[in-house]
Image (tube, rainbow, N blue to C red; front, side, top):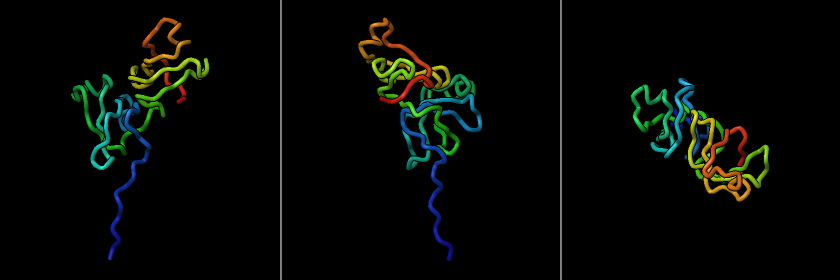
Length: 129
């Protein structure tokens, strides 16, 4: 008698709100809106031009096993600028430039004083508060 096998676990920890890229098509990028099929399939929005060119429209679905997070930053998180410190912070509301840049709103007083609300910053200069 063979033992029943559990379904394979996703190879990456993809979470709702993360910008992700397709492992088999790295220029295919989107933001995870929801997890479906018992957490094995991601519903993606804010799709890259590559996915739109492939006929996906404004949203698509993809198995988690073919996705990898671009960073650990997620929509809805408060983040700060690594090079300026925690006094320069905001809440992530979107990803642009194929997931490499985060849009920030509800800015801290010091960041808002610079005059750009909302603003955008490369994800590699952001960390979670």
